[in-house]
Every structure is written in C-alpha cells, then in structure tokens.
Length: 115
Length: 113
Image 1 (tube, each protein chain N blue to C red):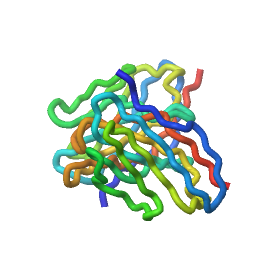
Image 2 (image 1 turned 120 degrees about the vertical axis):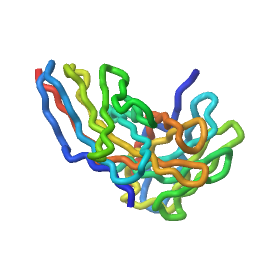
Image 3 (image 1 turned 30 degrees about the vertical axis):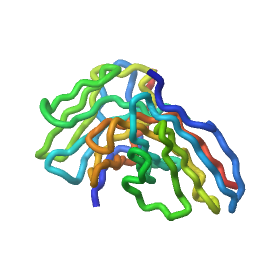
C-alpha cells in the first residue's frame, strides 16, 4: 500500500537556525507531493507542491522542498526559522484513481522553536 | 474569492447518536474531499465527491456517508457514533478530482462521549 513516512515526530530548533523536515514516499514514477502546515486547532495550509519539472520547489513563508527520485524523498527546508513557524507539518502524496485523487499523509512532524 | 468553510466548529455528541457536518467549497471548485484526523495523527481519507457523485472512498464503514449539492457544498453524516469517532474532521475542495491541489477548511472538532 502507498505510504508516506515522516521519520521525525518532533523537532526543536533555535530561532534563526536552519530547518530540514524529512519525508519519504513509497509509490509512483511521477508522484504528486505536498507539504501542509497545521497550527494548533486549525485546518491545513498548503506550503508548496510538486507535480513535475524543477525538482526544487519554492513555497510560501520562505519554505522550499527538493524532490529526489533516487531517494524517494521530498524534504522541506527553511534557511532561517521564525518563532511563528512553530506548528505541525505534514507531507502528503496524492494517490490517483478513476477521476479522483486522495491524499495520503505522513504522521506529521511537530516543530518547536526556541528563542 | 472565499475559502473553504466548515460548520460547526465544535460539536459534542454521545455514543449512538448521529451527526451532520457541513462544508462550503472554495469558489469555482467542484470537488470536495473529507478527512478524519485523530489526535496526534495525520488526516485519513474518508471519501471524495465530484460533481455530486461519490468518487472514491477510504477504509471507513458505511455509517460514514455524504452528499454533495448542486452548489458543490457538501455534508458528512456519521450514524451510530462511537467513541473512536472523536476527531477533527477536515473538508478540502479542489478544481477537479485528481492532479489538483486540495485546499482545506478549518475543520470541525467532534467529541463523542
């Protein structure tokens, strides 16, 4: 079965430090990949997506992600973390069927930011 | 352009009751997907509606059912509530059923006692 793995359940970084959140997907020659962010008690906000083309994808809030087919990875990065980035981050892959598609999510990585 | 909205924001029910959750899709979107997010977990796909027809279903029992209306808004109905149904229910809308970005609403927090 298709799956998405986020190996890190919780990460703590200092404000101003760089960040990398890991994501591995399990299926597909041309995966459709997403990163979403969720603040406590809120819905999911799309940070960025990869459908095809350039493997380095730019998103909102200064985030970027790199698609590496050889490693089945789609890691999220930010060069300098702000306190407001503290949240839960979810990687997702779309599984296509018939005329539809469903998102398969990882378990999430909770990001804490130290002052 | 309005985003995805959901109602109610919070709901408390008792075991065995029935509940209806509502979702208004983003303007111009014809597809709605529902997800269940248990505490500390990633969202799990329940089902998707495309142009008023169910178009894909996850591993959820038949007591989870839905509707999509001509204006593309949607309802999620859950019958015979169980304690494990306590979760955040997320609705997402998209322009089309696949290869399209899904935009999420704020969710409905359901507590079953």
